[in-house]
Image (cartoon, rainbow, N blue to C red; front, side):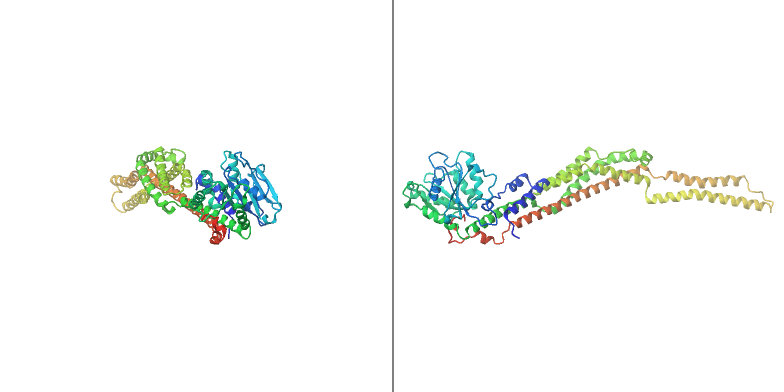
Length: 533
């Protein structure tokens, strides 16, 4: 699909606005896209109708461009005289049936003078006399700059005394490729052949391979100059496909310039290293930060474990009680340093880091909350189930023995009492004695006291359990922080890829399917000599 230049510009400006807001491009790059020139000769007319060729006489003060237009019109339609600047307004000379339908608002109607004619032969041409662009009056210069994008052919008028004008030369170099050019060395009756050759050499340096230069005079004896050839050349340009060729060429050139601009922006987005390296780059800085934080947390964790061990009941009863903050200003500084170094390294790779920096800023304030939440949860879990699995299993066995051993001992003693009583009725033996009573009491006491004592002494340390929980919580918090940052990097990478895809689409819209036929003009055509090569 072939896009019109104005469509591509609108799409590029829309993209630049959102990219600037998200921090992907600089304000300078966005401003350059916003200031793209969309004005053209075609924008003055309705797209449904064939438009005329727009030809403008341009030059410095006193070179005689207004006189040339008056000579062309056959009557005084443009102001002439010795006053400087001579031209203070834009003079339009065209057929009475031709009208500019879409005059831009920035072109003040008060500075436009319109003269009309009835010559059918000149119906397809609008002649314009531009103000003196080297004027000290800024209004004149602004008028010239505002009208330039709407011109097809610029008739650049100089005089033997003024053909090396620096202001004119700078304007020629700036606007050169955007227009077709004809050159008039006016007031030639005061000129020298050396000046003509020097002027021609200047134009060669500016990029014109074989510029078309007409020598004209302002005296009454006009038969000896080349004004008729100038008029015939412009009349010939108004015929055939010249307007279409200029239109296609202008649009293709502007698309190329926009394409290059977008490619430069894309290069600044791509950077020197791929975005895929960001996760490994972050891991490098994060591992260093984890090592430092781990060393710095040793003492606070021990103190916190002691506190939690002594206040376990309060902690388990009310989560808000006994909160011990491990993430202090020192820890926050170390974490911020890791993020800053990561962003700095990404910036040194040429990547646009403002969106990444903005996304990471949200995590800076969450680190303390994540660590606090994970450590408290881990401590609560550790205190609720203190000790190791083996330790807890052993305690269960001892608790069982604390019940079963005394019961077994009492059962055995009861059995012996019953057996002794039964045997004493059949024999003359005495019924059990004091020794049995003492020994049986000791047996029952020992079977109860030993498991009770072991159970008492084998209880797991709440401090050690809290210490284990704190270390586990810190490890989990570090893992969550790392995951959050990796997710942020992944989102950044995905959004970055989306921006590059949009830029690639915009660059593709700048492609011209038949760019060679649009830019190359037949070497035998006068138009080929009027374009910068």
